[in-house]
Length: 262
Image 1 (cartoon, one colour):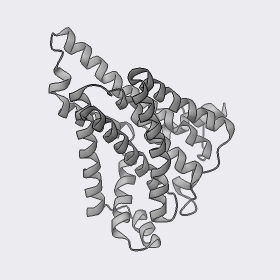
Image 2 (cartoon, helix red, strand yellow):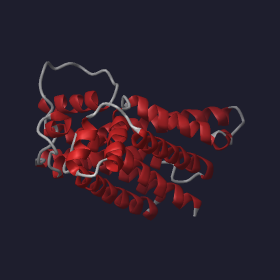
Image 3 (spheres, one colour):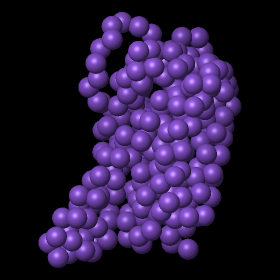
């Protein structure tokens, strides 16, 4: 029952999905193991959308619809992902952007991140990441191949939040980041690994060696990004975890887009 509650709590924390209420309790580090599964859910929604659209276009005798409408559909993908996650990660990205460029010391950056207002640095960071993601998704739709990365990328990206929770140290006591941090047990590692394994298996089945190589690189990115973000502000916060998700997702999508464009 506790594992089910952990999974439900992870979805309640990171998505807009209505979930059962198990009563008042605090989030724990066990939630982090389920973050890749949240990515599986988001990736499945995106993949399902394109399967339906592609089937409809073929049925109507227009098999090139996805290619012609790549840019608006790419915008739709990024928007759906943001809405499904309550813009939680985007909020963290904006706060980290303000702190990253606007603070001279770690203490000052933490202070900036704690401010609910969004400054010019945060806005610019969000816009750049959003435009990059839209461009990458559009490229994947236009060129074909590696499209399954739209399913796998959200999984590896949310593993970045898992790594940040497992391997990082809290930047401040209390707060969302500290509440989900802690060393994982064998069960938590198995849960997260299975989620990643599903995404990697899809990539490997669809693209062979290239898919497995991409998955390995995505794993490394997920491990490195939260560490880099945390170094800048002196530890892990909820904003760092959220920003790590989007930065990791953008990097792996960019890699996939470059592969199909080569």
